[in-house]
Length: 214
Image 1 (cartoon, one colour):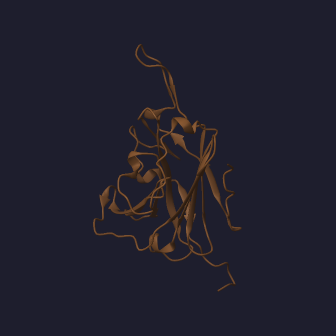
Image 2 (cartoon, rainbow, N blue to C red; image 1 turned 60 degrees about the horizontal axis):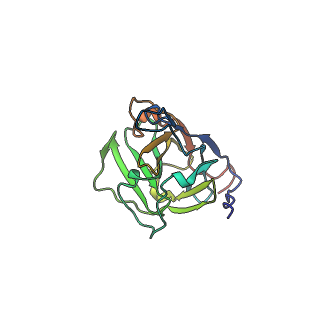
């Protein structure tokens, strides 16, 4: 089986590699009662772009990886589900520059998803309910896996077209031995913390019609 080719419009895209947190480094030295453990992840890349229909698109790809050593949630009915981060899951954080609030998106290979709204760091808006659901696609072959998440404009922060959003990209990888690896574009704390606002180091401009078009 071959992975699907991304169907991308001709718009600017950003692709970047994620790195494991130092506390979950890919290489763990052997001890008397444990052999050396290496990460099953060869490379973890993320791509994002704003599509002309107003959606924000995020692609995560595991390349040159030992998928047989990774627990990948089985496909199920797409629906909002909590605690996806306890297993293999891809995550996006986004906020408006200068504002303390932000939004968290969880995307599981199972097709399940979650969207959370926060007033400030880890201060969740309990009454928030997403107005629209993301569309997820997942595929894998012998040594690669790919997830695409299309987030409709109704699920993004309410901002004018052409607004730049601060973005953090991350992933939790569950190994078959039960250990979790935490991957992100940038780690800024001694322990894994995807909510740290200074780790939202990427910028994504929401779609706006080019000058001269309506």
